[in-house]
Length: 601
Image 1 (tube, rainbow, N blue to C red):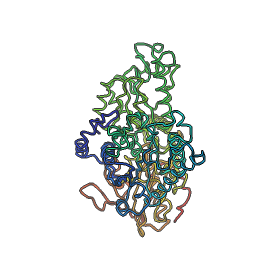
Image 2 (cartoon, one colour):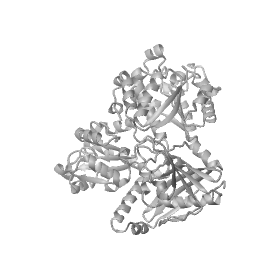
Image 3 (cartoon, rainbow, N blue to C red):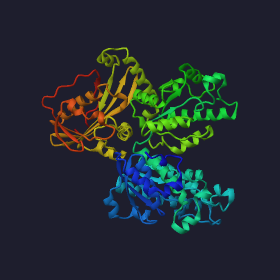
Image 4 (cartoon, rainbow, N blue to C red):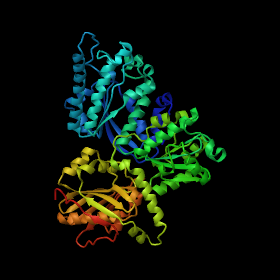
């Protein structure tokens, strides 16, 4: 990843050297997810696309773009377009701004009812476009809301009076949000907040519109592209998963070892203390969204515990999954935390007030996010603008994630009590529910396909509409596995999708959450898959392994299952076959409840 593309970035520098940065990114030989992105614009979009490409490449996504002609977004969406149809977009971005509002009339003689009807006409035009795009291309759509106008004819009353353009934009945005709540594959890019943060006077520089038909200043385009990238990377499961936090002068003011518990700044007594308190509240809210909180501090363990016990703290010891308080290098401690949680190190965001520690961790752990947080008054703003945890989907499993990982640590601690690993697994009293997909689990199933990398044999990604099509088709055998034990419920942790081809099943997706690695869940899934296949007259399983930078751990999975290798390409793809005629169930200690037969058997 290029540090020049990390927030906060130098926009003029990015614009000047974008070609150089693009060459650097393409030359790093990273494995990226290929995505076809159609950008339908109400204005000139060339510079937006060029900056968007940089940020996406930096996030592990290799985009190919379709761009509409200037201001042809409506025509491209509503009328037959052979070029766009041949492009087969994976994602459509509709880029419109206040300049594209056509139904507003600055006429103070209009009735309030007529003003509202104008808002509805504008919305209905947009709604028809979104419906047409979804019906035609069956892919997610990102539509920005509308920024406030750069002037207010009615002054402050422009916001409340139905004749004001500010009021028109507010009402139109509310209708857009209502559509988004009802359509899970439709995402709103918050252009209004972005323009406000940038500053409307600077954002809406009219000279760029008159000269180039840019609705925003040229220097604002990197901010726009980065903000849009946040939404796209979230859709495709590229969000970070966990925070690793320093303690002294990061979670509280002062040094606990020098100042003692009474001397650190937290609470409401001083301006500095209030800043740290608000930052802890911000982190606590992220925990409730499923972000994993951890501590990495150069401290004596007892001093760290003393600081976390401060009565004014918002966060306490039980809010953190792992706490590493010692004098070892922080990069080594972070790797230890990643190992404990079974997460890749690039899943983490490291927050530390010390620039030297930030530099060391950034240099030693590829892919980890290390924001330049500044003073405590900047902490929330910087993390918020970085958007590491952008939310485009939310499930019950997300809300329970901290609890699930804490239970996993309890399991690890219990393992240390057993010399025999099988005895340890038996002590967990594991129960699995393995069944066909059901509507209630479909959002989580889709989410898992876009997140799991280590135990994923083909790393195939699905949108919710694509997964719905799989769930509705009789051409597939589908399994989702949920695992419970005496410590708690791990939720949906494993997915298998196989496509029927006569008496052969081609396994096109097999993945498992890192939370349940080395617990025999894959054996339970295999037994159930064989059972379902036999019931449908399938006699052979065909498995594929496609190597990536992150899934090497499953390179030998099919061989371990007893599959016979059929072929191997120079790129590392291997094909495997398993004859089910003499298959016998694998030895594992999970009690399996196979609820629900295949609906389309």
